[in-house]
Image 1: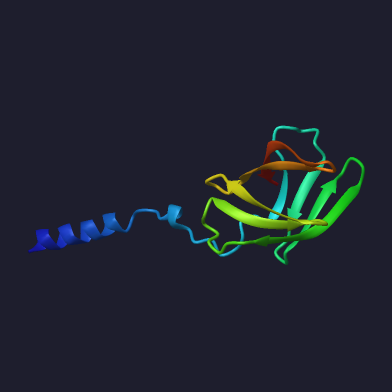
Image 2 (image 1 turned 135 degrees about the vertical axis):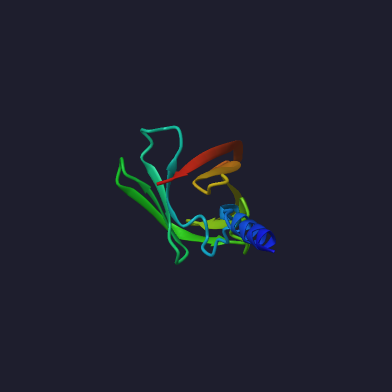
Length: 128
């Protein structure tokens, strides 16, 4: 009887020892925070997304800022692909693809020019 009891206690301890870090339920939007462009240490641009739905696009080199709003068009903050509408004068809706640790974003789309839609580009942003 003692052997069965010890076996059950041992199995209980082993089964409780695991970690469920992969099952973290995100309750805030992963875009919130300050991001800079990846791969160019000289790039003075940062994007700051605030929890109140406002965005500040800053260029520290020429002390220039653009203000606007952002909105997540989904509701599952655990998804790696999030669809956002960004408005800094005219609304643009695009997918932001997050890395598994939510510290890098890839954003791809057509570059808008005064002549219309230009080339297709992708940029990576890193959480600061």
